[in-house]
Amino acid sequence: DWSEPVLQALSAAAGILGAALARGEMEQRISASLAREQLAAEIGALLTDEPRTLDESLHRCSSTLVKHLKADVVRIWHMDDRGVLLRSSPAAGRVARPLPVQTVRVGEYGIGRIAATAEPEVWADGIPELWPGSLTAAEEERLRGGAGHPLTKDGRVVGVVTMLLRDRPTDAQL
Image 1 (cartoon, rainbow, N blue to C red):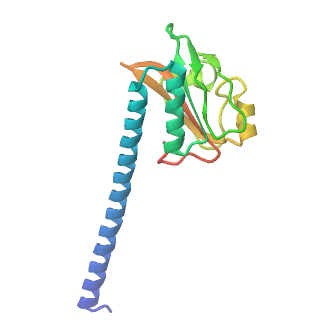
Image 2: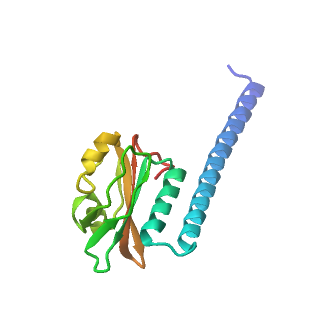
Image 3: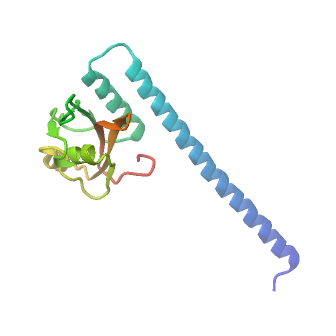
């Protein structure tokens, strides 16, 4: 048997706990939102900075994504003018040996599939063959998770960005 004052105290404590949890969740949302805004601002500044080659600009964007997302490898692919081939920019990240620049056809390998379907993919336990030789590179670097996302402009796919990780991707990284 609980007395009325004890029940009221428990109810008040539950309310305080609920408010504290809600505040913590809100603080996490605000922090994540600020981090996304900072990332967007840095990428925007990189793309509007002094003229550079496309590869230089994309590599700098990849490096910024590695830093903000704590990714092991980020690689940006851009579509050729005919919309048939995707060419990688130099990858950024923490790998023992540099990944060679690659070209794949739209629809081929994981990169081409993402471009063809315009659908993002997430890999939690194993990375598919994204480009020729990617499975060997992933095994050598112990990469086992990541995500690929189409880059679009005016509703048209213009490239693909991939993030590769040694662990499963977290919600914050996605």
